[in-house]
Image 1: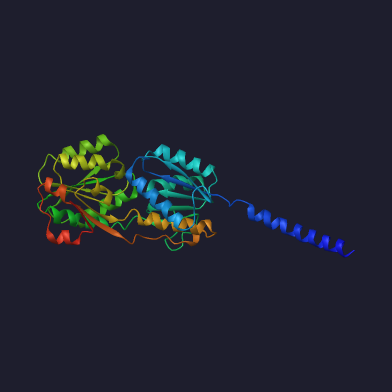
Image 2 (image 1 turned 90 degrees about the vertical axis):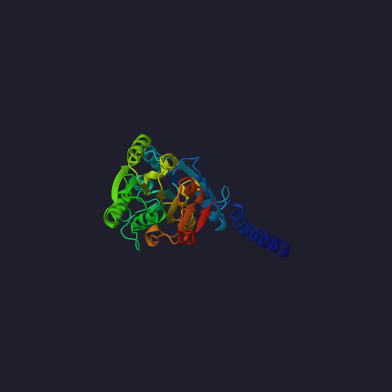
Length: 327
């Protein structure tokens, strides 16, 4: 009798342990992150951003193939592709979507008001994507580009590095809020006697014709605003060199590609911070409760090689302020 009772007790204990053992052996749930980028797949800036995003996720405990999968869609700035890929990503029912660029978040929000979205490099309030920076209120949050007042800094830098200029062409994409607002700031701050010329950057042909026409008059310089201009940056940099025009650009990756001088926020820092927001959302927090944040790191980069090619002597005071000098 005692043996039978002991056997039944042992059998019951083993049966109770089976579900625990089964649960312990179950594989970890794989979460899905969708990424919609305005950059082309072979763009070095896209490669750098993606590496930073994945590395930060890894630091937070997310391993691709084990507990997370990332599905990328890259458009190269094509508007039709943005709408198409936004619909594709939402149809995959991801746990969260990361968007790069002011043109990417709108198409995703048109597709869903429930899937969490983390955006990078966006003017969210002006575009109506969030209710406020402190309380986004919907399914989207993230990191802004920068304040439009930075456009005044570009004008100052251009006059400092090329004091003889008397006219400035402002390269902008008139289809985007940043391009319009930044040009307005430059207009408001331009000193008397300095002529401004808006130059649209919608197509390569339009950019080439606009800069060539502008360069026929002497003492000119360029200011390249943010927005859709990034897709044509190599063309703009080469045209500035061909026509010997000093130019100021909004991001470091212009200067590393041969642009004269750039000033703007780091494009990698907000991607790392966005990975932190993605991590928090995957762990249960809501975008509506995560405040939209502004950049915290700005970079002044000077390409001395380009300055020499243009015959410019960079003031020592400007060199001293630079975060990076490219020889």
